[in-house]
Image (cartoon, rainbow, N blue to C red; front, side, top):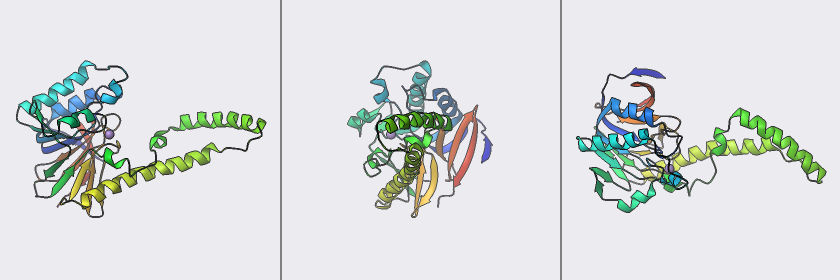
Length: 264
Ligand SMILES: [Mn+2]
């Protein structure tokens, strides 16, 4: 993993971010603000789940930092950055406004981004591929502590089961199957998205949705996932030279980079 001390502003051609989840407690709005203030770009793609409207239906959570993210995005749109918003499933109500422009922000169901070298990228959020990917990823994030607690719970459960004359139920066997499913989930999502891109006149695809930042080539298609601003704090950037890079934002304009895709 490389270490980049960004010279402010970090001047790039394009920025792609997704899964910010404003309105959700888990959103790292301050870190995102630091990133947005540190970067200057010609085009900014907001690749869905920027505002977590779903979560806000359970009660409004809207601190100042979340408001500042919106203000910063609109400020960029007002001062020369082209801002394209591709809504996701958590902000799907904006899909009713596809084709419209609010405060200089273009709303699109999907977009085509042309890299400096002329290669074309399909930009979409990715939730439409949930239907083709059926297993659940939640157990992938289960920590070992939670696992220990579940094992203890399982022990009690089996005491009860034995008393009731029922057979032993293995939690670990269940979890092993589920964790394997989580890995399968990510790779089958990635393949489904890449397959869709392969059926279009594009060389790559930018998406989000699964909160798993990635740059990799799948069957000749560049698969680029923005990651998220809940846990991984990642952004995809296209440098002026045309190379696409995944940034892991840490603090104060310091980014870690772990992948550089020499596109083209
Ligand atoms: Mn999503």
